[in-house]
Length: 472
Image (cartoon, rainbow, N blue to C red; front, top):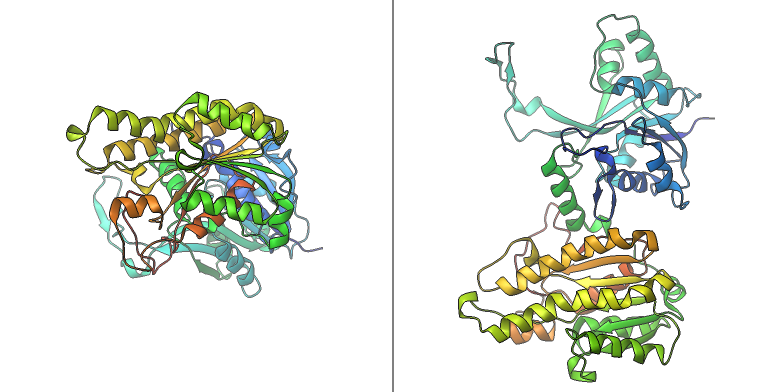
């Protein structure tokens, strides 16, 4: 019976990244690159089966990813060969029906879109071989063996190849059979094999995307991590009211900074779906989040009314503005303690309670964490520290089942922002209720270590405009 099979090519060893593990096992946005790729394929409705071809000696890492049972379409995990072409042949040995549609995808392209996957499978209804490529923004030159330019092809006719590459199984198998008779056979990808050895078979080209990048060099790890944050495609799915109620009913949610703004909106939504919510703030309960005794007192208050804590959210923060050299010592200590020391204290004090429920901790950062700005040095540096804290705790606590994530909202209409910037034009700010809804989504998801951008528009979309503001 013909099937739609996705083959994940995970045979690289990551020497250019400079690590002693395969690059596909590097963690970005809370998961290994390999898991992001498997998750994208597993969730696609056209993919019926997934075969993972892993670097020799690292199969246990793949089995660890699959152990939770989240990726039901993965049917086989096999060792790859010494070459890309050899790995393809091993994968083809698992596919017996020549009419099956086979999609080969690099494990280190975790940002492949659903559209690309869909168009590859659809194109196989009309063509027997399909590639994915994007136009080249750079001029491509050809050099000779002496590093002298031999030719400069017309850029309009050039494309940069990506994956997936898709084929009818019988066609790619036949191409390799013919190639086996060539003593000088050499190819860096599978479409090259079809092009050279079955020249009468046309290869259709699906439009790729810039963000469908290949993680190859150290800078790519950073870029991929940022692209995950910037892409709304990677936000947890919205749920129905019934699903929200099922996830939240009877759960205990503790919110610091919950008297107004985003925190109050999170509280209202969670209560609407049956959660028991406890809010603490300086204005409503006299809670100083930067004091360990106050954090412990908050826990005691909660446990006096319930025997479990499932979710903890920290939206408390202050936004000092001004040049650092002109900032008082009192402001320095107050801002640093509230914006950074407080999340540390909450993590320490709530860990055991969240481990007992396999719960979730949610921090908040700001777009300023990526680059310090004049006038916001205290705020920006503390928010950058919160991001690093989130990612570190996600790793530390992963074995205990405690999830730690961070929300990075675009400019949002909150009392703190109004106090700092005054009234701003209607429609220029993100609604705090939207941030609250997305916060609930990440709280009840299985994600950990994720830094989630919440924006009015997807900045990766062609018509999206960027914003550059350091505040919540």
